[in-house]
Amino acid sequence: MALLMEPQLALGLLASATGVGALRLAWGRRRLWLTAAGWALLGGAAALLGAAAGAWGVAVAAVVAMLAAAIPLAHSAVTLAPGRVRAAGDAAAAPGWRFRASDFGRRLAVFALVVPVGFASAQLLAFGAQAAARRAGWGDADTLALILLLQPIVWTLLAAVQITRAGPARMILPALIVALAGLLLWWPL
Image (cartoon, rainbow, N blue to C red; front, side, top):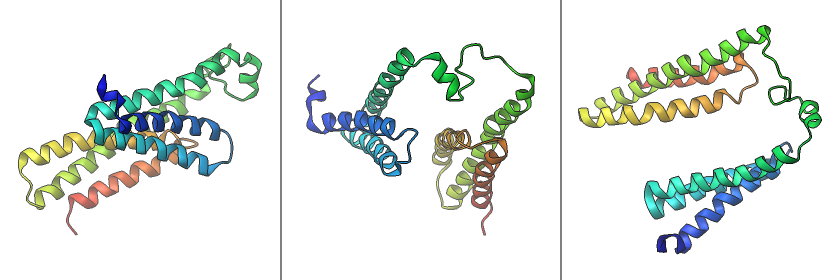
């Protein structure tokens, strides 16, 4: 418990909660500076707590950020009238939402681009990094550890980028960029 009283940890926890608050204030508005400040605070909190307490610190920063995000979400869930949800165009959250067969193809395309295509792109980048590391003289155990660590991280980041795109057609380019980077690493120029 004394570990939580260290100023560095307290500052990191405060930065984590404040970062989420800044992102919430910027939500739906054209306040790029506030969005950037929120993400900078969250990244700084993770770095600060990671430096202070290792993986435990990063985990605590993530939990505090999730708890801070849950507060306005719970408030909106309790206070937002059902008519406002429908008026906002959020059909998935609106009462009475029904599955439409016409959406099936788009949903299938999104799934295919994020899961198997995104996975394959991330795997290709990880293989490319492994090949580059072997050319640089790394040992087999080190290159195996690299690929096992890199692939899920790249896939997660790629999926986060892909699902923020407006439609399936715009999800293709990020996967192609990652796959191309893997190919360039795999074959020496």
